Amino acid sequence: MPAAGDRIRVRLMLGGEGEGRRLQTQYWRRDDSGWRFDPERTLAAMGPSEEPRAVARPQPRAPRARR
Image (cartoon, rainbow, N blue to C red; front, top):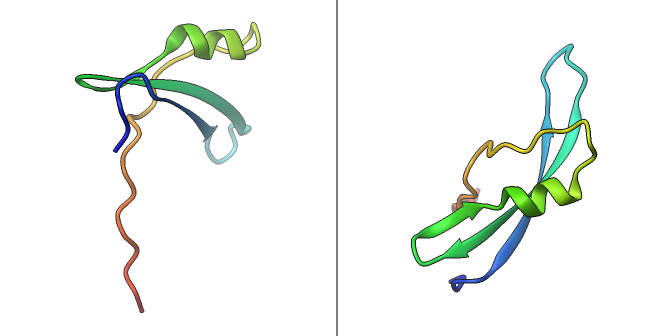
């Protein structure tokens, strides 16, 4: 289980059909109440034309079903 102070980096592919896709890196940190989007760290890692926004909260992966 992650502890308070842990950080993760999430890489997302944004854009849909016909929109031109782009990769966005987001940084999240864990505190006592859960995962929080870290806009300062995300903004520092982005180019000047990108805008940081929390797209989704990281979720633990469910175990894959065996076939």
